[in-house]
Length: 237
Image (cartoon, rainbow, N blue to C red; front, side, top):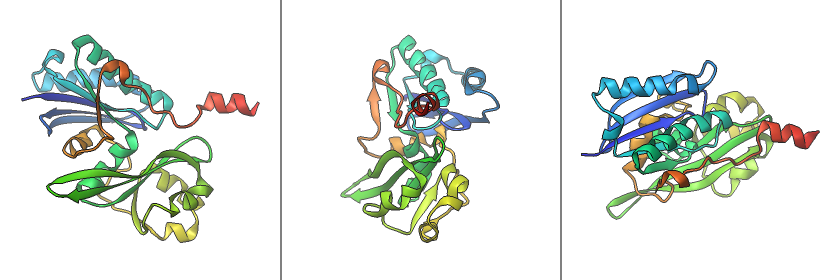
């Protein structure tokens, strides 16, 4: 039986999860008051202690690589990379929008993920489940992108079939800026969280997809699809 330890800190909600094979054993979740770095080590040690495990017992790690908060992404990624390096274990990596989509995909629903980016930008991606033969496969309808909010309608027009379930903080934060006709075609599910959560990594590991990669720690890198705030300010000046 193999153990997987997962971390997610790309948004304002941090989370950890512990899996035996692909079954969730335990998890932890917290809001970022200042920085996830102040919580992640303590929460991780508590999770292991509670389940009578040591880091050496973990067979592989898992982490989301973004997009999201630049600082937040680095917290989980550096934490997991350090552990994987120290114990010579592999890392499953996936983007944070796919992780956000996981609960909807478990319900076999196509889903549009919308997360807040910098200024007038929104992170956007769309996914579905394809059941072919005996296997279910995650399909990337739209790859992660950072687009201007007023361009959302055009961006999804060709590939996304409407109406569609929408998840993510980008919906609630910017719905007043969406095209009114487009907004009418976004469905919401109150049972689904607008935050990516490490505990949902098990959903993704149960499906075949090239979007989920098992990597060496040195190959696991953050997914930045827009310039940082500092870079934007420098460019505008």
